[in-house]
Image 1 (tube, one colour):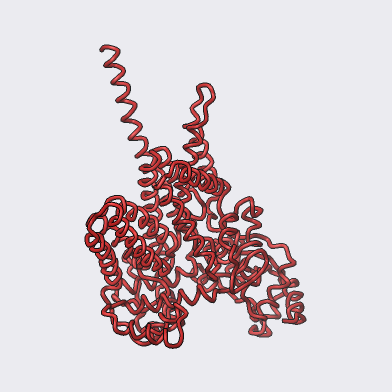
Image 2: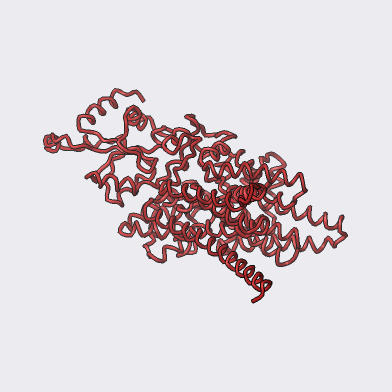
Length: 610
C-alpha cells in the first residue's frame, strides 16, 4: 500500500471513531444520569407537592377529568399518572375532596383531602406509587440534554456539545429536581425548544417550521401557567418579522400573516387537546378576574369584560382558573426566607442570590464566562445567534425577579440550559486559544472540566436537592441562608425513617415537611408540640422509669421558624440551643433526648411565652 493510500486510510480510521466516540459519550452520560436519578427515587421520598400531583395526574388519566390541582397545568401530572399503570392503585372517587374539586376556582379545591384518601387507601402500595409516579419525569431532563446537545453542536461543534450536556447533567440542582413531579425542568425544556423552533422559523419561514413552533408553544402552555407570556412574545416577534420581510425584502405580507396565524392556531389546538377538549365560552367570573390581571377598573374594565364575553373562543375553564391562582401567588407571594429574614413579598434580588449560592462553583464560573464571551462576540462580530442564547435566560430571570413568589432556585431552572450552552462555548473557545509547545489545551481543558463534573456528582451523592456552594459555607451551612424547596421539600422522610429504625425505634416526635407520610414507612409520629403524656394512664407513667431515649425531628424550614404557629414556636425554640445528634439528608435535625430531658423540656415549654 502506497504512503498516500495509507495516509488516507489513517485519516478515515480516525474520523470514524471520533463520530462514534461522540455518540457513545452522549449515550453514556444520559444512561449514567438516568441510573443516578432512578437510584435516588429508591432512596428519597416524595416532595410535598408530589403527593398532590401524582394522584391528580392518575385521576386525569383514568377519568379524563381535570378538576384536581387546578394550580398547575396537566402535562407533567399526566406523565406521572401514566407511570402508575404499573401499580394500578385504587382511585377514591367517593372522597369528599373529589366532590369539592368539581367547582373551578376554589383555592381549597379538595386536592389535599383527595390525596390523603388516595394514599391511605393504597397504603400497601405506597412505595411503589412514589417510585412509579415519579419515574416517568426522568424523560424531561434527558430530552432537555438532547436539545442542548443539538443546538450546541450546531453552534460550537461536537466537543462543546458534549461539554454543555455534561455541565447541565452534573449540576446538583438539575439532578435533584429530576426526582420530583414538578413543572420547572419541563418548563426549561419547553422554553429551550421554543427558542430552537423560533430560530428555525425566523431563519426559514415555512409551514413545517410554523407547525413546529405552534406545537412547542401549545406544549409550553400545558406545562407551566407562567409560560403564557410566550403568547404575546410570539405575537410581537412574528408581527415584527412579517413587517421586516415586507419592508426589507419586499415579500408578500399575507404569507407571513398566514404563517403567524398557523402558529397560534396550532398552539390553541394543542392546548385544548391537553385538556381533552373540555372547553367553554368565557363567562362573567372569568372575564372579571382576567380584567383584574391587567389592573383595569371602572369603565375600561367594563368595556374589556364585555369584549371578552363576546369573543368567539372556547377555553379550558381549569386552565383559566389555574392561571388566576398563579397570578395571585406572583403578586402577593408566600412566606419566604433569605439571610435570616422572613417576608411574604420576597426580595428583588432573591433569585440571583439563590443561583449564586445553590449552583456549583464550576457551573457559576461557566455561566459568568459564557455571558461575558457571548456579549463580546455579539458586539465584536455581530453574532446574531448569540442573541438566542443571551436574551431568553436574562429576560426570564428579570421576570422572575419581579415576582413575589420566592420559594426556591428551582423556579429559574429554565435559565440553566442556556447558561450551560454559553459556558461550554466559552470553555472550548478558551481551550483552543491556549498554545504552549505541543500541549493541546483544546482537549486538556474540556477533559479537566469533565473530571471536575464527575467528582461533583460523586461527592454530593445522594443529597443533590440540598446542595449549597462553598460560597454559602457548604451544604451544612446553607439552610441558614435559604429555605423552602432549596432545603426541605419532604424528600428526606424515608431517610429519617431508616435512621430511626437503625437506632432501635419506630416512634418520633417532630415537625418537618412531609411528616404526614412517615407512617407509611412504619414510623409512629407525634406532632410537635406533642401532648402524648397527657393521654397516658397512670399505669403507663408508673412503668416509665427505664429512661429510654426518644427522638425529636425538626425540619430546617421549621427550625428557622419561617411560618409556624405560636404553639409550634414555643416548642421549637428550646431546640435551637441544643446540638442535634444528626442532620438527616442535610434538611432534618434529629435530637436524642432522655426522659429527664423531656421533663426539663416540658417545663421550659410551659414557661415559654408565645
